[in-house]
Length: 420
Image 1 (spheres, rainbow, N blue to C red):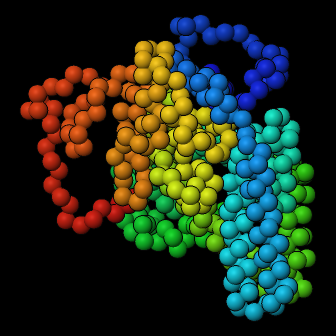
Image 2 (tube, rainbow, N blue to C red; image 1 turned 45 degrees about the horizontal axis):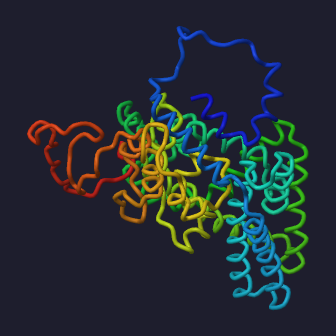
């Protein structure tokens, strides 16, 4: 698993290895104990073949025009919002329109800095780091290093409680196995059986406005990130200089709060629609590929969804290959070579499944990514069965009487999320 994770977070392996040589102590003996669970050698081998095929197709090469247009439309919205207030005055209609435009600009800035943080836009890590500091600091008022510190934990252990900060929301909200844990220990700080009703009242509105602001400032001060602090201060100075002449200090702060609340809702939809529907719980010690597939799902593409999500609706591909720039071509699956390391079709079967073309769908557009995707990667999946069929996948089917699961009785009331 270590090799797959190392590849996932580093574009230029030769550049990184020269810094690691002085830290090398030795090799672990095969009999040494470790925390990794059983590793599927065939799965890992096929995934490496898939990654090599993507590299040969130059899917890791960024499209400069796409990212230039992305930055350009962000800057254009910042200017347009100010021009609305400047030309029309600080009335209700211009102010609401300016807040909406700034909210869209801030949300799109998250997506741009995300790709810069993965060092997938420019050819060198230094250029990506400087560009991310500009976007994250000057355009958003946050620390680039804080984001990377938080986001890389999410990629390393997606949907693992107490290791992935994106799903560690207790005791405010309970996700996955945390609801079972709280129920077993009789903990009830909030009406968790109603959390699906109050989630949008206190979750998205307060995420970037309160949680991120406090966490970001604490990180920059405690970790002595003075350069990021100056970048963030430049954002607030620019915002206040632009809008205090029209609204005064109190009005400018109200505009800032409105923009943060709108941006926060957008951000929550982008980041959580691919992960909350999947398994959330304790560490399972899976191999890299299995852990990423178990925690992510794709959302059906469309021109609007692609733009709205910053092309992060293809979350399976992003988690399996984090350094690949967004967007991946929609026809990339068809271009992958026929065959793989374990026989014809092993690699090419994986990509349509990862794209959600052969999977059942959840209501709302989420693609289910069950165990069959992992087996497709390993080349051990039998011909697809009809929807609704039961039984184990990837091995011979036993008689129905031995494998069919008894149908569950329909619940009297709709299930409530996080019932303790």
